[in-house]
Image (cartoon, rainbow, N blue to C red; front, side):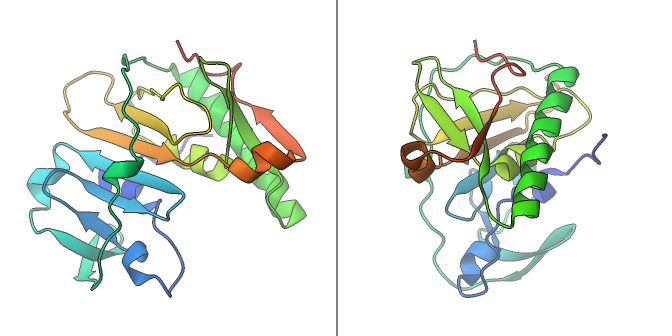
Length: 204
């Protein structure tokens, strides 16, 4: 299945929170160094060319395809959840990306049918630790441009997982970074089903 490529702003908007009682998390945060959104379980942020287009700092509502009115309130400090990692850019081939999407779609469909989240995506870090993730979050990360993206993640298990994505041709200095919080309770209690991501994406 071929997805329609998302703009930087559309991709950031995927991480917004839908609860009307926390309006600041329904918006997109424009900073001097990046544009970001979070639902407290994941963070999507973009640096690069988008900063030259959005120059007014603050939190704004999102009305596709552009920002809307300002939202009052203090946006969470997100710097502390971004794990530092010594990473080397690694290109993921398009056929791997298709398999990742198919895997995540299977988990999402199973969860919809059950009416609850019991299917998850599993990833083994280099340190041998197992990380369990929400398949819808992983699926959203893959919604990139038509060029092949680059994925990188931190190696520590049971800590926020950092993915960085850049244009494969290197001509656009726009980087998309996603930070996902592992599903800790499910690691302890054991979910009904973990979909193994390891055969589809190299982590070296």
